[in-house]
Length: 183
Figure (cartoon, rainbow, N blue to C red):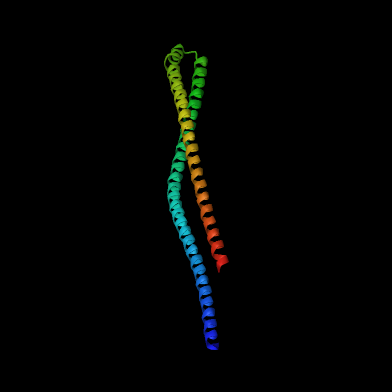
């Protein structure tokens, strides 16, 4: 009987030990599976974010070129406007000089030539330059508007990259905090 009691006790203890071991193994497996799921999710998130970062960087590169091109157009428009303004100023000075010459001359033929030929040509040139300046102002304003629009797009891409960087940082922190306590 003692033997039977001893065998029963051993079997009971061993079944309890196996039961606890199975339960502990089951919890460990569940924890490992959950950690693998989280790692797969983080890997997927990181992969998608990395792809989006690559796309955003490509778009940023293209947008950077668009901003540089627009800035070049603005610079060119300002240069042309400055040239037209200088030409206009030169023509005004030339007109004043010729009018002064006309007023100072006693030669009636020269005076008539100035009034009938030179001044009308200068006035026509002044009108054309004034018209060209006005058109160049419109082009300059348009180019500046385009540059501003391209800069806004560039700023939006920088903002998107900042958001993606933050998302990747958050994934990194979450992964680190998930892995650390379990170890």
